Length: 161
Image (cartoon, rainbow, N blue to C red; front, top):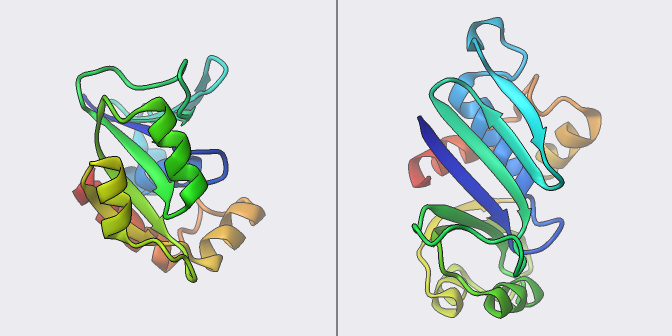
């Protein structure tokens, strides 16, 4: 079974949304009857398992000194090109991460190269934050009717993950 472990650089960067998009992209919609043993299961205080028999996406929540990946290098950091987020990650460290899913926001001064250089990790994929995705999350329809940008994001992120 493949496991994709996601950690957010700080709260609100979009880790849970990325996890849901990855799961939806991998298995169709979350409510699809052909998904089989698919589950969306809170696990403990800050874990969210989204999985089937073959793939699990785990949202570990915000990266902290007490909540960081194992040293095997398999985790993925989800962040924006935000100074505060990068500073938080540097305070905890990047051991255990194999790369970054960067959520690009218009108007940010930091680039993909800046994020990669500061964290000394490769950017696996850069995804654009789209207002249509936020509207789908807010209306509860993200997994039922994946917006075009979210489907593209999921496909790109699956390749990067």
